[in-house]
Length: 117
Image 1: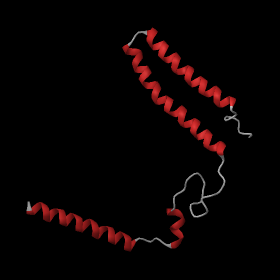
Image 2: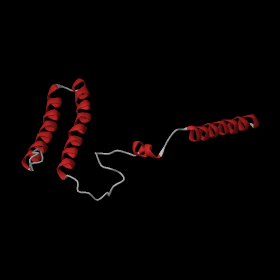
Image 3: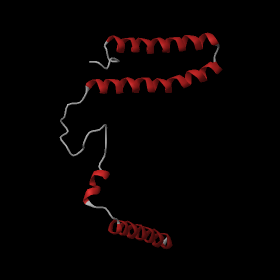
Image 4: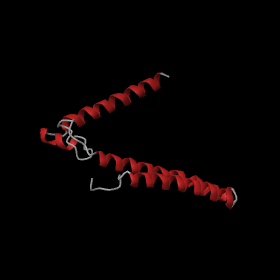
């Protein structure tokens, strides 16, 4: 038990020494601050967070997420085809596709797919 404690302390000590040396020996300068800053959607993280954001861009992102998730829902339907008969599989698939088409029609009807707005 004492040997495990000594080994744990040695491992912690060596890792702390290595981290400290890497901080001291690194060649980071103040100009590297821009490289290390996060970059999300073209926004500058050092400017004001209250700049106008395109709502249309947000809606297109939500549409993409919805149709991206539907791919994950299609895979179990494919597996279901092997377990059940064709009639049950076709009813479930038809119902699923109808829901997706109704959502697409609603988005098209609300002009969410039109970039000219």
